[in-house]
Length: 198
Image (cartoon, rainbow, N blue to C red):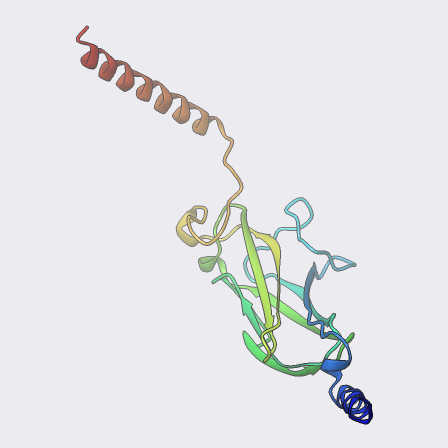
């Protein structure tokens, strides 16, 4: 009986010394990105084309908030920004946060600048900024924010890679699409006749 009591007392003592044994460890990093143009009053999750479109040399504000939603401190959190090629920020693309305590936030305001006309597509183009945060024990959080640009001179056309573009709904697209469909129909009928021999 004496040995059982000693084992129980030892286990309780070790549990108090090691919080991981006392309760379950919960790890969570939430990354939240919000933005606003300098003419806008509040931060939003997405900058819609119906609200604001940025031109060459325009600037807007990005608010990065990383929350430690777990019950343990997160240390040496590596933050990485993934940006479109035609914007830059006043922050390092990669930096390290020494620690975010459990239940606490890290907030950083960043200014994003659109480069000059030669870097921006002429037509309205959808773009995205992504930020990821990874702690030294492997906890990962990530979030993205969308915005639109236009009025540049880069290749005088819309982007073909790295960005989604608003669809062109003009009459020329409709006519070209109809001609293409008719051509395909003619080719398929000719192939069918050749296969059947009549």
